[in-house]
Amino acid sequence: MSSSDIFIGETIGTAVLILLGGGVCAAVTLKSSKARNAGWLAITFGWGFAVLTGAYLAGGVSGAHLNPAVTVGLAIQGGTEWGDVPLYLGSQLLGAMIGALLVWAVYYGQFHAHLTDPEIVGTKSTDEGMVDQTAAPKAGPVLGIFSTGPEIRNGVQNVITEIIATVVLVLAILTQGLNDEGNGLGVLGALITALVVVGIGLSLGGPTGYAINPVRDLGPRIVHALLPLPNKGGSDWGYAWVPIVGPLVGGALAGGLYNLAFA
Image 1 (tube, one colour):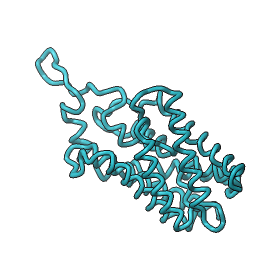
Image 2 (cartoon, rainbow, N blue to C red):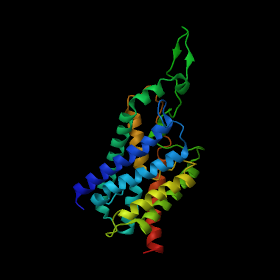
Image 3 (cartoon, helix red, strand yellow):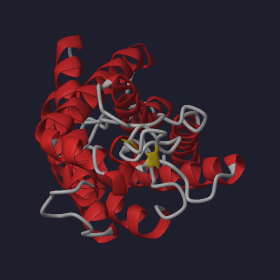
Image 4 (cartoon, rainbow, N blue to C red):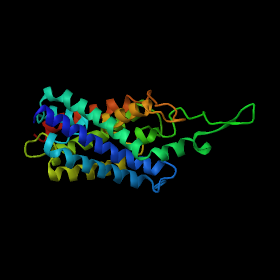
């Protein structure tokens, strides 16, 4: 694969992954969305279809890693050159940011309605008897559309959860999903991987929201911090290291385990 193949495939594939994955989170969360309160099943299947679509788009171009944890696992397994890893990671981060921006564009009106609703952002009375809508939770009422967060904030547990879930994902890709060259997802492998992502979401996603992909969390979190959203609250940077470190460690462990047990 040429450098341009990697850049184009990973940028476009990851952008579509985040557009559809973040899109289902927006659809379920935001006021005036027809899918509001559709629930966890909608989110897990939405992310599975997002992976499937992004992987099919990028599979023939870049191998459809779409995830630094997958890239690291493949580099340790031997299917990807270490010299290509920085380009993969940079392209994935760029694609994730583009995808998050597109989610904002698609749901622009819903974001405004949600973030200006007193019942959502909170209110307080001023001395003049007016309503102040500037009060917002620390993590922000729409941060969950862009990035993950734990139900119980325990750094050790949260990292372990992300490591275990990512090992399952990357090991499934390495054993069941690679193309003939062994450097990315094959046609059947993309379907298998999408189903694995749904399974991880249903079974292991409850504690942390299953980032299992550093750029899936970091890119949209950066966009959340930069977007001019009213009453958006904070971007919870104190937690941001968990969905970066956990998946990277999980991807590396999966690559090593594959070489020990399956190669």
